[in-house]
Length: 569
DNA sequence: GCCGTTTTCGGCCCGACTGTTTTCAGTCG
Image (cartoon, rainbow, N blue to C red; front, side, top):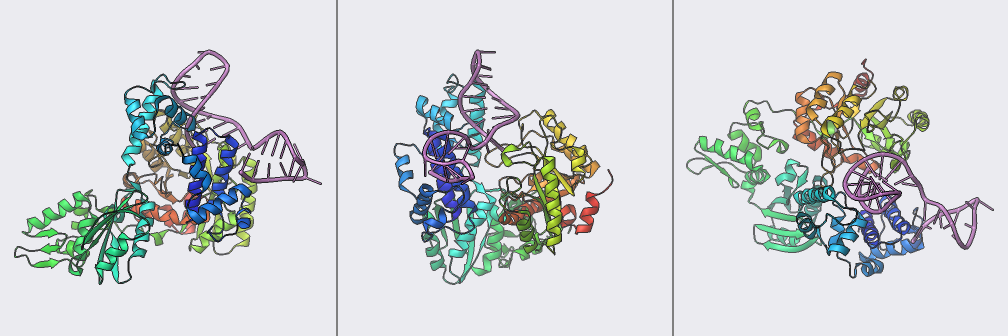
């Protein structure tokens, strides 16, 4: 069990307690404990002494005992007691925007609702309207929230899918060669199911190993060449074993997308050939290609097309002309431009973040803590920000091999003004301006707010433009084109926030931004050192948006980046 | 449930927003 999983269980206990109406401060203690577990500097296992666990901040005797119990058994007595007579479906209701513990308890008590399906039916029937504190608008909002959750239902974030795929790959015997295909290989932001292709000796053992992984909840089917399992996380995973001479063709076929493959098949047909998951064949059914994916594209007169581009969005035409973009790679990234520290809501010090960035081989890292109006995040007022600038100077002197840029993620307030005055912003190396509140304003208002920030001569980057949280919050009604037009003029960068549930701006907007000449800054929004590696999801999304290194400001060497940051406006 | 030279009880982070209410409750970050 990972610390993260333990923390998730403690949080679930807190959720149940809240719905059951337990004392708020007790609930908060559980949440604090969960956070401590997640941030613990060591993995908690069945062997970790309780006294060690109790040293974590906010963890006392009682929580330490429960954490130890969870680490050893996967659950604890107290949780099991809470779950008696508690419909677990109520927990998923908490994910509906606008529903918190009080309303979930109310809906359960008054209408007997126990899960999402029941909630949707009740909302459609108009049964919510008239309950204390709920009217027509709430009912509509709840219904929309349920629909959003249903759209994501069964889909998981790219990051989760990659982790599961890695787990599967490591569970397979060393003798087989395996690779993910499908939308996972294309790097889509959410993934429906996980496809793994394999070749090699001992495919029977591979199937056996696959079906008997501890994470498997149910084996849906298991044959010689294909097995499907339902994982405990609710995700379906398929393993296909293909002959070596067909591996490239199978990889191509199962990577998709559907539309991309339709175009490829048509292209083969024009030549009197056929292409399928076994290979590319001529009119006499002679195999022209199959073992190697690139060869299939080549024989069809195309450059090899990177999986991220395979959406039938112009990539085939570009490949035909030999004009595919030279896509950005992870190695091109020279620094992270969006990070938080323990000065606001991050977990680690400036120095620790800087060292972690150096460890990654970065040239620079920008420290961009929140501004004061974001009270929950312990945002910095001008005075503390200036103290932080001093501390950054000190760290820059103390550490060699990395440059720490002083910055802020300043809030764009509801009225369009910024949360820090211009003379303070002028003191910083880099300024990200982001919307964190009033995201549901009408398009005109929200867009004007952001345009105001774009036009501010101190603002270098607009952070997570639409504010979406995949599966949890719809994007705000920003007029993206208008913002891009303005940003192109001022050469203000638009952020591609690499956090897996944001990936904001999305791939299609990356492409639009590039077309309009808007610089893009990829930042992780890291709140702890290990988050720095999330940059890979930003890179993948940028690749899906046809980005080359030149389009991304944090591929630039430090001198060029600084020149851009200091340009006259 | 945790914490503490305010130490065995009493406080714990709260401000903005929304929809509902005619003075506030619930949610969210």
